[in-house]
Length: 393
Image (tube, one colour):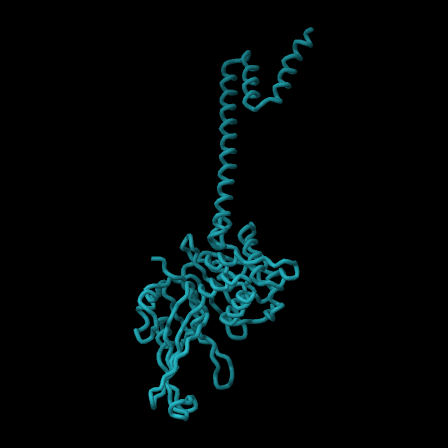
């Protein structure tokens, strides 16, 4: 009987273990009433701490769930470096620093990624492997969802190799940008996305040719993806500011001697005055500094002098009325803020590219040097391609 009396409370306790945690804690406290008062208080304190810990765990789960939902919302709006996992690098997979830098600029542009997410997914695996927009979308998702500091863009690199964009080749950043953009545009199936992509990047100008003998003038509208600005003037003097480069680019040029054009009205070749007027600027403005030049010996030379990029760029303050062919509403929107710069270090034969990009949510600058990413102050000494976004007023 004594053994049964001793076992009964143990059996009751074992049965209670199957109940809810609150009931379990209550029974255990009741089982300690016959003990000393001080011990009971200690157990009550322990229970309180346990319940508090459980509440904190539950709150942590709720916060994690909310953070995940927030990240999913951010994924559909912002760029790669604006999520909790921070700015993500790209491993160099074979002299791919130029490609990596341009990919970072594309994928950090929220207007571009908004278009990219709406593409038509190719129907079969073979088409998916050859589709540049789709492979860029997969890379974007891997960068946003992964926890590693960098990812390897191998699938995209293999896709680009189909179109003669190969690894272990040194590329000019401006030329590679045009190649990538045209591949993306060509492989987008939805006409409305092609239109949005063009509106996002395309610059519209009007070219003028005026005969210096009879004043006969021809006009032609054209478009371009970058403004290829000279860094030397017509006398080979160094241009010291970006505004000077823009003025030089839009300055009228006399076509004489071997550059004369045929005039339909005069019936012969005559001197012409060639000029270019700005008609429309896109949401993302791309400027290319022409730092590579050919010398008389056919040797490619790099112009490495420092040329600062302004944080804000107002074309109304840079160009004259004669250099614009747009109405007041169009020109009112020609105010930009610097978004990204692709910079080159080294020589023409052996160089390296990296990208400086401003986070759209933090307004902080980051240096994307292949797999390494760090926060920096905006001070780029040798830049080749720069990207501005429309200033939100």
